[in-house]
Image (cartoon, rainbow, N blue to C red; front, side, top):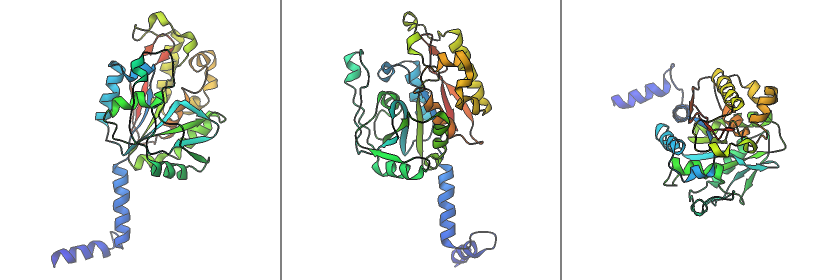
Length: 293
């Protein structure tokens, strides 16, 4: 009897919910807030990181242990540039070996994580700035699987990819990312996978094994990016053409940089920022990665 009165008081009390449905709605919303996932930008670097046990891949493994286990993973990879925006919507995405000249062991990797067609459809429906097409032909390229297989080696968490529309400018991608925020509340881990500084034409191949080696302009731009991210000053990062000659060297083409904007677009004022794998490689690449939230 006392319990019944207590429940009635909760339901009818002036200072709480006025109906059971409102109470349920409140509970669901609270649960969603508690499950807000962080967002990652990961400098993925060489495809060999997908099979090597090195400081970068070990940090990816450790990161998965530090954050909540996601309901699914959505990757915005530098290696899926399309006309229009697409999202993988198959039950089992194939492992794409979109590279050449590497050891056979790399080509033999199969990362068998499932997809999630329902989540793909939901994601498409929450984006209003663009028509997101459901894709059944792509899969997981090396911007996705080389990283995620270290984070979730059992391949038991659904992994999807969202493409980057090459016909649109950086502001468009930053704004589109904001529309994906609801996924964070549903426990989806969103990863932007690229590299802040990425100039393959200027790689110092003789310095590949010298960890931390970076040209002066690469280190300077990497520091500038980090400072702006820490300050929450995203405007210069969106309009990166304003960085001048050093910016052009760091971002000669946009595909590896734009995934960063997807990560930044998902940041809220409450989110804290942390950096990891903050090192240069071969002069003209940086592996610097960001955790938001």
